[in-house]
Length: 275
Ligand SMILES: C[S@@+](CC[C@H](N)C(=O)[O-])C[C@H]1O[C@@H](n2cnc3c(N)ncnc32)[C@H](O)[C@@H]1O
Image (cartoon, rainbow, N blue to C red; front, side, top):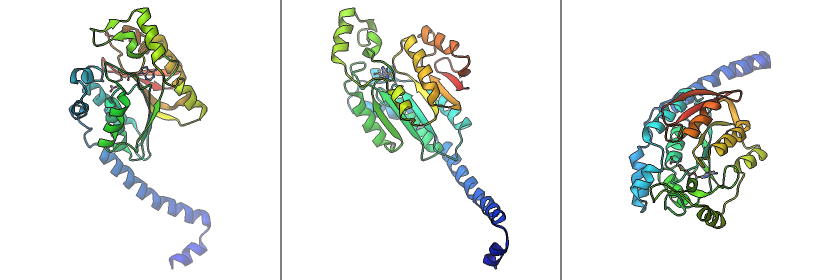
């Protein structure tokens, strides 16, 4: 009988009925994904403890990493404003030990299992920790996120000196010119990663986090370079939009123009909406 009706009715009507039936499944899937999104994120302390168990100094891990409150603030924005019926795409600049990366990758994986985060970092010594990417890969594996993250080893834009030109282990001392020159000669990673992602026409990202080199002109440039890779209505998260980094705060405030609209801030991270 079903076959007979299908035969008699015009194809367009049959498609319409089938599409309506499919919508039920789609809603079910979205509800399941949405339910996963309400599962609490990985605890920040668990991430810190993990790298400490691998021999990383706890103070450096904590001080070099975004605080839990700010990551939770970003998670709430992602959960509230994301389309949970499809995998999300994120760009993450500056991963250090992988703490913000693992946290956010876990959040978007819970929104949709097919979510993917591309992480860009030159894997240089940072805060006395050599080869931070080893810790990142191990952490992603440990938390079952290896299939949700792609790591691009390199500088987001031009080459820059590591550690923001400071010695974080000596009370944040600014390095002398000769020390900087010496470092530059010894540090190597591919550069222009964002530009190259654009060349590959990789994706339109739903969100991006900027937490790499903290020179204000550099961050301004990153914002400009990232813009064509972003989905309109997506979000760019900037870390260190605070009194501690007044120049970064300035960049955030100046970005409220034609490409971006200032959306929210928590005193540490700033959120820009992509126009
Ligand atoms: C503050 S740490 C990132 C902390 C990380 N977002 C977290 O909260 O767990 C900065 C990282 O950016 C990296 N970095 C420096 N210059 C960069 C650049 N041009 N592109 C990408 N990453 C960069 C540093 O090597 C370091 O690993």
